[in-house]
Length: 383
Ligand code: KG4
Ligand code: ZN
Image (cartoon, rainbow, N blue to C red; front, top):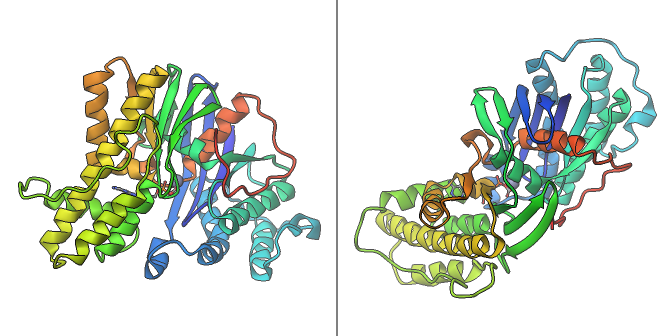
């Protein structure tokens, strides 16, 4: 199957073209085209993602980036093609509609079998932009369009491994799979007893861990997105002995739920008492990262014990954090040596469209029907 996929749930406009072969147990995904355009620099002045700006940026970038991705895949052949008005009826923004019309009028129908798009969770105006674009192309080309869950994409991104630079493979996995999903919008532990059968084991009661990283970065005067910045500052103080200690919220609690807002508040109060030197930023970043890591590791330990999972996957933007990875790896090596631990390849930790395309392929192999109409679901949950 050749799959064109779109991810526009937040501040990345991502498009990929993959050629997928195999079945749900064993599959190979060759990357024919792949683009991740980050809007982060544009959102930085707001200190976080600004939904209407994200939508505008997606509208401006989807056409040129899709053109580029199809060209990478050698699937763009220029041809004057009539575009019936009905094909464009989902697009309300006039300038977006005109750019999509011009795009469709200039390209021959590419040899793709399915279009896959993120349906949720995420920012609804941003999700709708991707969905309407995908459905418009689907209508114009007569290609089925499938909506998939963004967090499912993050799980899939950790299940596949990179075989060659442009090839990802999925080998048979042992169930149940426990997923620790840590991103800007989510912090949850989800159990998958079989393909796509999800059970919620724990989740944050307030902020997501990535959100806490971003908020702490702001308190430290570091730019958005804050996760990588906080990690860099934390690393600069990692070997010092004079340290600060922040609370580890809910660490003694028997549930697998998380809470990060108190930790952020502890950082805020601490910063009222000190001078914000570069060294102090490093100390605070380190203490925050240590506290967040301890909670994530402890809750994952509880969830592994409770669920008897055979595979642990860590997914979402925060899974790029090396200190957190070391904590989780340590836990599994020491206490759960029978558990197979999987992280996404570096190219797949953040938001991307490859994970969406691969998830779509697996859903197709699972014989899941195509939805009649895809509806953006900002708060959709896997479980
Ligand atoms: O999955 P993702 O790209 O987007 C969402 O679905 O939310 O996750 C983005 C989050 C942001 O909060 C970002 O600060 C965080 O992941 N992040 C990190 C690191 N890299 C990205 N957090 C901690 N350490 C990192 N190295
Ligand atoms: Zn994400």
